[in-house]
Length: 367
Image 1 (cartoon, helix red, strand yellow):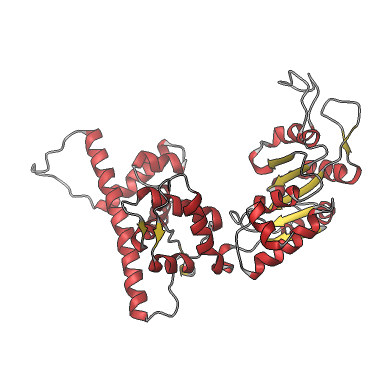
Image 2: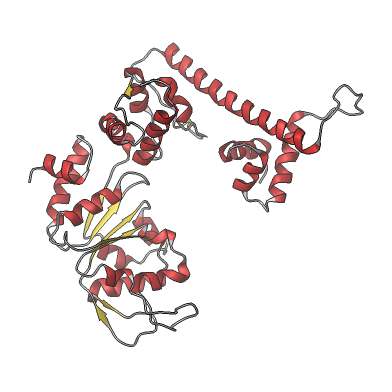
């Protein structure tokens, strides 16, 4: 099978050299039972490559079991992976197979592998080396034939150096390491992804949506901190909000994230090869949109506050005028106190976005 056919069959999108190189390696390692470690930032498509490896292997007719290690409570993880016997702990009302038994003969994909506790890492290493384990509460050994594909968005070598991940398990897993580059490192693939999401979205039932050329430049030059997952969400949201079949710059700008940090507008899309005055206009335009959002949120907050405390006669004489920023700061502090510093609940209570709340916490110096 040619690389192009492989990509089409298994849903790997991209024409960049980085993706072609990864596809070549993926096709080679898929035919063996060697362990594979897939690394890369969140949202780059690690699970897509894991599925491609499984579906192109001799185990394709067996189960591919995907497990997000970071989503399972630590107290339940061992039981989820290895299973348990009835009565082995409180709540164990029946015998239960773990993911290793369910994946017997197939592939077990362990996503967010760096989230495993050191104790679970020891038991996982033993299974990798012996292909056998014991259910919780069992006295008999269970043998399995499972291929392991692991993935993480963390630097495992750094985790090893900081004693958070076992070096022997790390070297056992990284027999082959596929590192998927972030979307900003392969900008030539961005429009191909965007058109793919346009074509395959359930929103686009009439197949009438198109991306304007200027909007394509905007998408290509944006940094995409959330990678492919963020691009998919932005495309689908823009389609849902569009009143026409053309997605232009205005369709996307409100949906892109501006984060301020040591490098300034880190995620601000910058159109290269454009005159400075054009870039200045774009930055001002973006800033005005953010200000408009904040004003709308503050207006909603003021309306909500007024409705809760009752009507106020602003024509009456007041003994004291309090600055708006002081009122706002007090409102934020009270909301945090009321929600026991749950910032998401506090933002909802204040009627503003969580992102706006974090920005105002920084502005007011509130810990």
